[in-house]
Length: 248
Image (cartoon, rainbow, N blue to C red; front, side, top):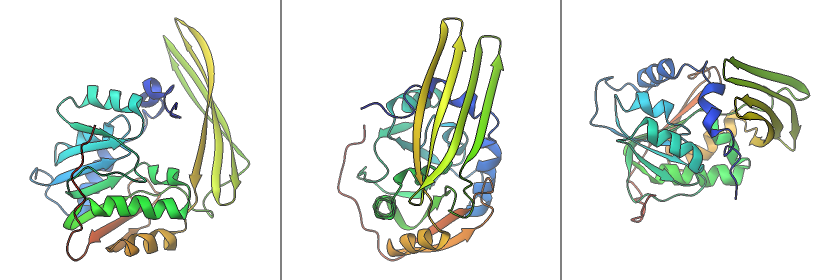
């Protein structure tokens, strides 16, 4: 089954070139209260994409990554050849190990779409935390902050690459829905393709409740790394170790 990012994986970093990955990692280090040059801690980046956060996180942690899209992981591995990456779905995964920190950034958590799947994803991540470990989730928009029936566009204009990406945003049953239309021109030719996206619009209180149900003490930062907020959950009690598994 083709992943939604299969066609745009090779252009992904161009599309998000304005994103301040360095600044976000520095802000994350500050919020977590860990020493910036401390590499004794282990970290799993869930929904790691092309590994740009990992490129900077690995300067501070022993890092691994997990993503559902093989094409994005291919880019991530090229960027971070000494890092272990796993192919898996954040809704339910089992790596057979635990980490000091688990991150799920760039609003990727929204792709779980429903509260039940949010619970499953948070349980999976929490089960991979060491006792006292921290789970960091950067949320997607809430219903109040999502603006349906608005039109958005992004353009890339390089000598050998032209991209126009246009979409109209909608909402259906507390789920944000949008089709990203890409018109891509290269010296080899021009093509058009569409990515269909659906992300759940979870209230702050809902996400906090789900994280608390998973045994985490939760703090919410309304600003976070990019202005979308940030949840930081600390694992309480004895760890519930996942069974041994084999990451791919």
